[in-house]
Length: 432
Image (tube, rainbow, N blue to C red; front, top):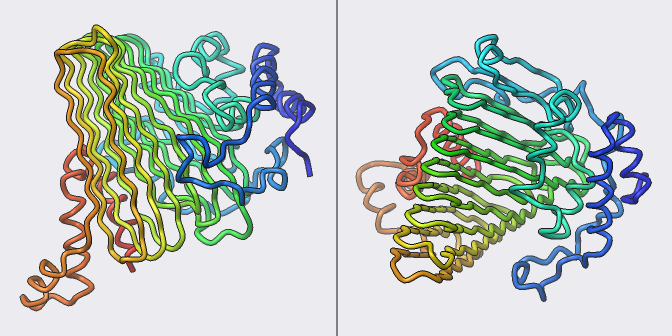
């Protein structure tokens, strides 16, 4: 089996027939990776997440010919989630294209929607300008550097200035080979608008340890408007490590939806940067854990300019011996006056064997701000369940109704009904 090494970086780049600048970026990232220690529970960001059981050496990189393109991809991946027709669909198996469509209308508007490797070869100047240089950077951590060295597959979306994409774009990854390193790069130029649904899934009961090491970069220009929905439903053997960052320009808007249903262990860093006056971001996170799942979400709302707004609400329900960790921070730089920052994390414990740690934080270096945070961990209300049962509703249905009521405030923040239905459908499946 191929191991992670400088030689395997070169092999991967050669197999993908990449230009020299991308190979050089990969090699620089590999050097960073080699010089960084593996995170441990002694590191503040990793205090509640122990990854000593991860066998990276047994996993290795995904270099060439690993994609199981004959695999049957579940019908729901890539299916329409909105009333309007899709503007583009991309379905990948193990980071290699299986289905690809882009409407003639969007092509005529100059929209680029393709896999990352096509983007590197055909739109190299654009990719070189934005790839891991403005949002996620290789030096952010051990797994960010590993991703930058070995990324493979993923999606590139570029919307030119003032182009408003009415039809949504949809990409899906079906992971079967136990190691995926996909990269999502979204660039909206000034005045552009788009809706992008980004799905990740793998077989529910995979054998052995699987690994997903991803990065998501969302760059929203001045007066631009992006709705991004990341829906993760990996199998219970996947260890996921993600770095995700959005940057929002003057009077720009980022509506960022995260749904996490799967994996054995997830550690994700999710950051929004409000860079210019009037920039706005909303982060809505939904998760449901069961079994021995461990989910650790590290969120940051950075107000880098005055008159900016961020609004984060993450809600999760937990069963059995699962555990969740949410660590949130609102940060206001000096001079970032008149900002409005909000963060809240609500957790519903469906069984007393589950555990949720909820840690909000504020770091404010300006004096004219409105920043609030809240976190709650509560048990399933037997009073509410009893009330519903007293009206003739079976207990199982009554519990489902209470859970639906718990998630309803966050579902109301999701403007696309198909996305709401997909997420709640998975919650019901995991409850049973």
